[in-house]
Image (cartoon, rainbow, N blue to C red; front, side, top):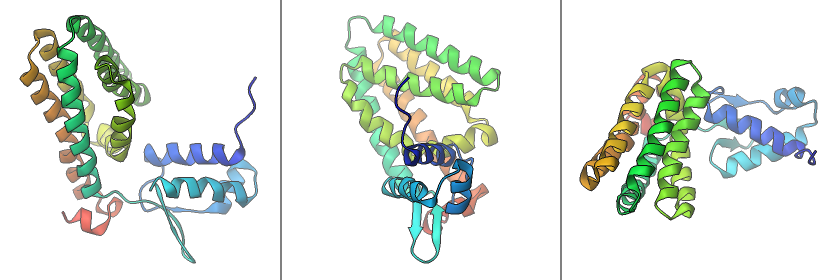
Length: 227
């Protein structure tokens, strides 16, 4: 067995997952003493974990006031989606240029089926995993696997939107249909159709974000909620 992760790392990972999955909603105060009790620790590893989360923009540390889960911001989400659209559409062009594009499309179709099966079983976590695997597989097939770091960071900016939209808006059905449209375009070797399908798919996240801002304005920074 490997060496257990430092307690501060375990605190960080638990809080990070809870924030991204919106088990702790935006704007919530993070009480160091409560987290410390959960882990049976002093406050020191909790503070260390919170500092890492603050560096990632997931919590706001306010001197003399406390630490709060960072609220969402539509402008930053829009910027992340701009990056995703540009990169992932370019990725599709490289995939279609491959000699074995149809084989790639078959592998992607299997991931889509796994995504649909997970959601039908009510396994949201497995559904999110399949969604990530679909986009990761496309990037890997482009021959530029290092580009995934860029896409993953951009996806993380609106992960909480997806975490809210799937149960509240049933967004997974549309996402699965859009993935299928991308696969069909790849099989047919139609670059423009593939790009258009990806553009719709990525851009829909901003539509979802705006809908969620109307439903939950307290989850968003004031300027973003009134965008």
